[in-house]
Amino acid sequence: MRLGEDLILAGFKGAARLSRTPQGLLLQADFEGLTSLDCVRCLGTFDQALVWTATELYAFDKRSVTDSDLILPEDGHIDLEMLMRECALLEVPISPICRPDCKGLCPLCGEDLNRVDCGHQAAPAESPFAALTPLLGK
Image (cartoon, helix red, strand yellow):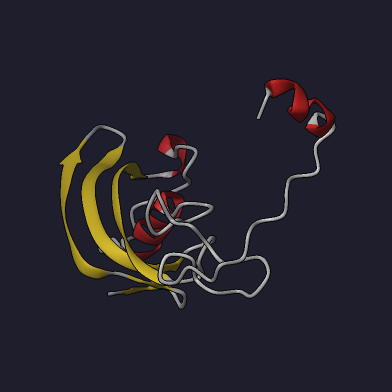
C-alpha cells in the first residue's frame, strides 16, 4: 500500500470504527504494516514494523471542529489516506537501526562490520580524561 509518494507499507492491515457523537463522527482506528528503512549505522535496508492508533473527530460543522480541523465532507465519504500517512510517519524512528547490536561501518575502509572483520582498530577516542588512563593500571 502506498501512502503518499514516499511511504510504502507491506502487509498493511487495520480496523476502523466510527461512532456518532453530538459533535460529529468519532473515528477510532488501529493500523499496522511494514516499511523498508535504511540503518543509520551500517546503511543496510531492513523492514521496520509500524503500529499506530488514531482517534479523530470529524465534526458536523465548524462549531465542533477540534485541533485537527477535520470536518465531515458533504458527501459523507471520509478519505483516511492523509490521516493514516501522518500517523504512520510519526511511528518511523528518527535514527532507524536494523538491530540493537549493529556494529556499523568501519571508519577506515567502510566495510560492514556485521559481515566482515576488516582488522582495522578504531582510533582511540580523543578525551580530556585520556591522561588518567595509566592511573587505572591497565
